[in-house]
Length: 95
Image (cartoon, rainbow, N blue to C red; front, side, top):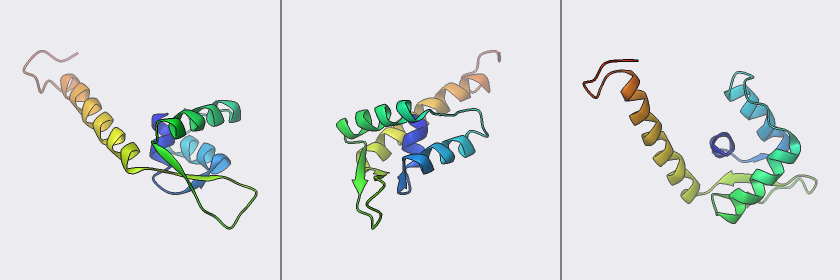
């Protein structure tokens, strides 16, 4: 879901999200359509993404909400704290 929230900082439809995630991860993350749409439903339920109006009636377009951006920010801080442990910022020996 983290990759989806990151991808949806700009409005995208499902297939474009899948492509963006693969690009962001340098090909290491490939999300199947069924997985993607299940995750979208969960993110909508939590109000972390929302539908965006579009001229294209064939595709549903979504974007990360303000609440979703807050979740991303909190996750970024959490990951930075973890990375600082690898860098020895806590004063202990490095891994």
